[in-house]
Length: 400
Ligand SMILES: *Cc1c(COP(=O)(O)O)cnc(C)c1O
Image (cartoon, rainbow, N blue to C red):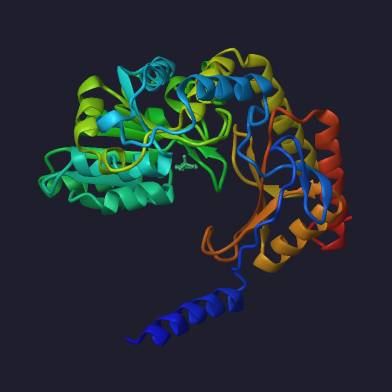
């Protein structure tokens, strides 16, 4: 194919995305991330679409922790970890993460996307099997693809299907079977049934891996995540998560696991070996964020009160919601056009939410995914619900 042919194909792909109504616009925010944000063209709006669950993204203590670390260790590491990119601060953060998640050790990555991308390939090979929930995050799917293990998929949160797939793996003579699940399914707002998953794992002597990105910092006692919530920290073998959501929302990911698993990843995981060390600023900020999450009961209480209030008022108003027990609260709307129009009209009324449609969610199951955060108070929730009701009536989504 010619060079001009290449650019024609790029234009065709862009045209298809526009024609299918799947074009994603990025709004410009001109303030720090917070309970409210200044959105270019819309002014100051209530923010219901960030992963800023604990409201820490603009917190002074974290900003100071980050600047102090940069003042003492500089801006960048300019190296991968094993050449000359590991400071005492990186190791301190890794051991604090391990304590927080209640594992032996942890290993930092540039993002959880990289943690998941580099997790499976060093640990499993062609005699092994990975049994993965069908709604698992894209980074798990990509990580599994990079690994030679055989792949099995179970219908999301369907424990009977999980057992069938694990049985199939066993029948196919898998040596190690690893079950991979999100701790929280972020499009639906459900928490994985880890006790049931662990029982199946026990039955078949399988390894359990949980991606806890939407749980670390906010779910379970002291925000230690879904394994702690369900009392199965001992049974869950591997936890991956992010520093980019509740824990200050900057950047960075990690794998927390038994010592030998972490040791092997440090030797073999490609996104770790061939990518830069986290900036000292990110490390310093994350260390403060973890301390604040441990001491964050008041924030978690406000977060959960907000979620409870929003869910109750929206249900009373006649909206159809999914999810349970988590501050992700999707509002089901059906058609993509309705969801998009509703989000646009809500923004006009000062409420920033995002519409999700195919291929992110199934066709005909378009939704507005709201995410509560601890920076809101009851008045903010009431204002948002009032806007939803007004727009919902205008678009005939709910009755009068
Ligand atoms: C956000 C998210 C990731 C990616 O985390 P980053 O640190 O932003 O790369 C991975 N898995 C799940 C389930 C997520 O929600």
